[in-house]
Image (cartoon, rainbow, N blue to C red; front, side, top):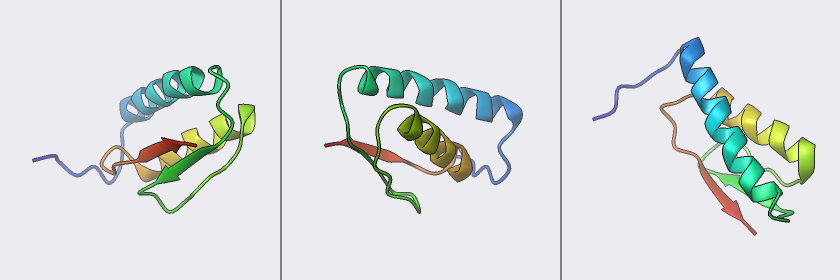
Length: 73
């Protein structure tokens, strides 16, 4: 059972940023244009730097305890 983390620590933020950054580099540099985020309050579309910033922001704002599913179209 996972422990709920309402207030992520700075280490948690750092880990989320690193994971998100690696994921986005592999997706966006592969020529993928449209990305959706599900299981979060946001559904985001975009490409390049704008998508990276929005997705990282969504991952960080939802915290480590929330599952985020990213689908590539």
